[in-house]
Amino acid sequence: MAWYLYPLVVLAGIAAGFINVLAGSGSLITLPLLIFIGLPANIANATNRIGVLLQNVVGVGGFYKQGKLDVRGSLWLSIPMILGSIVGARIAVDIDEALLRKVIAVVMIVMLGIMIAQPKRWLEGKGQSMNGRLTVTRFLLFFAIGIYGGFLQAGVGIFLLAGLVLGAGYDIVRANAVKVAVVLASAIVSLVVFSVSLEIDWGVGVLLGAGNMLGAWLATRCAVDKGAAWVRRFVIAVILVAAAQLLGVFEWVGRVL
Image (cartoon, rainbow, N blue to C red; front, top):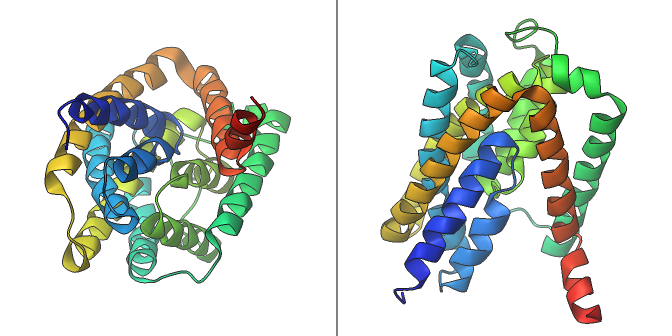
């Protein structure tokens, strides 16, 4: 790999780590970059999990120190996420990639509408810990999110935030704290599964992870210092950009210009 690509990988990791901890879809930055520098798509997908794992180690520590992490709720919700991530990391989904990207984008736009229509639900939540036990509905919801996260990872944070706020009753700041803990658990399992069957580029992965960790550290401070309203606006912006990218809006604009 050319020398000038090393700082580019770190910078992409910082951006992705910041976005992933506060919202999600940071992998939409790192996955294309890893493929651009020469990694096959499947190895890039696996290598990207190193950065995800390291960023969430920092994120969990940061939120815990600042009293925003519901440890009990995180442990309960990690169970279906881990089981789902095992399934997602091992299966190959027989679906057209272009169609999959459009479906994800539409779902993101629907969630955006909910965020705009019900702002108090995202800002206030229903409490500091999970509202009730791990019901069958919640188990199935987070199991499904785990399958998607284990298979692709990109965008899983957005779906987790929606599940944690609308399904488990957290406000958006505490939902972010639980999100990074749950993704950390599933990322460990996914990385183990991938490492058994794929030749992960550990050198690039650790370099990317260093950037992810710095971005995650900055994100945990911003989330707590700036509050739920700022985080909600940031998530809305990320959803808009991610949905536009998945729908090919930027490619269309590029062709027009």
